Length: 86
Image (cartoon, rainbow, N blue to C red):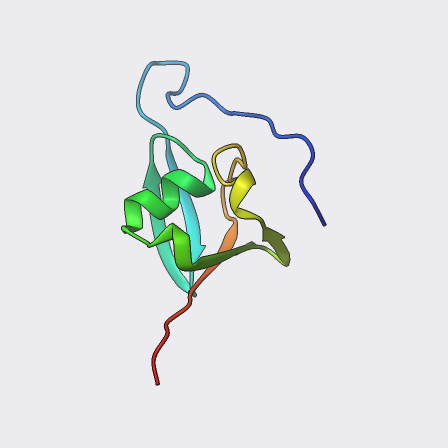
């Protein structure tokens, strides 16, 4: 499924406090602060976005959509990083 529209959520709650979102990343609990996009998650994890594939639930999120795809509380995210070698 290709994502065609995305709703960007505020990075702070109504009281002005930074939002915290609870996710499951590669099977482990993870708390993301602030921006809640796939790109923000990859940056927080220090993941190499040039060699990664991302699934949210059962949906593949293509790299051009990472900046706009907003994660939701409780999302299950799988990040696969490709490694070369011989």
